[in-house]
Length: 392
Ligand code: MRU
Image 1 (cartoon, rainbow, N blue to C red):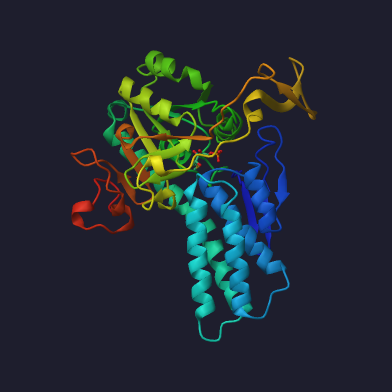
Image 2: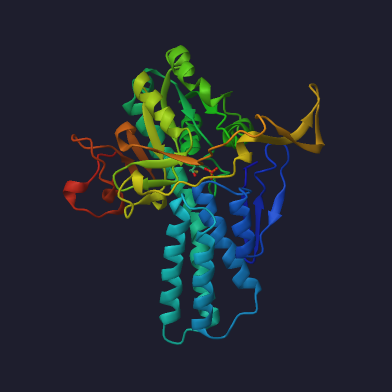
């Protein structure tokens, strides 16, 4: 059965509550943009592409079910205000801001059309939001295809035989409309019989790795092992050779124009480890995550989250032998009174990134060590064309 984090049909949206995973699979109804804002803020839904899609679809659902004003302009104002509000839910992932910008343009164009009314503006918005859901899945499948191909051809491990991969956070079906970005690359390697083993990090403090990626890997019967974040260096040193580890592959919340990449906290450390141990470090992200208007990583706003995410842990009771799903407990795991710093993301400098896997190909740096990301948008001239295998 395919894992579905977002269930959508016209006028109806449900999201899999990711706070209850991996133990319980419960869906929450999302009726409005306010519901979506809270679901995103509380991380019941998360992952850069999923956040954008849930926000876009929530507003589509609200528009379909509300008593719609007759005037095109009134509906336009309503949509634009709701999109601005949705963008305030979480600041770092650019996909939501990118989706809002595109949906605003669609709305404005529809409202400016001869004979436009409230209903025609709504329909234009809903069609564009629906398309985002469909496009994200096919983009991810292409990311998987290009990434797997690149790894097999461009890594020493890939040329030797089946490869093992390390990944961080959750970038799979739960973080996207389906299939996933970095986890999509691992899925694609597995599907073509080229994967030996996947290693996923726990991803403290929110445990997207142990709760969500591990859940997806088990669900898909992909051979996999969980390690804590602090074990990554030892993993590369002690098992890099025997496991034929080819690369660390991660997702992204925002890729700046120079290739600097904001992603889940801990990504930067993994990039340093990859360089030290001579394995490739790859970022897998759709073009909706590439933000050419952000010059470099220092311009990216990093979300800071409550300290309690570090000092408390929540889950069903386990008495050492059995799990009791009926009793969910919160336990304290840090000294009372300690101060906490909890940045949700960090920035990996482009220098440490070997390739950015997109749905149109893998972008590598030129001989001067510079990424030319304009190439993936089909702009920037021949000299800006990235080195890729994806036929850009
Ligand atoms: O805080 P989260 O769980 O939303 O962070 C998610 C990540 O950092 C992912 O790696 C990123 O959004 C890419 S998901 C395809």
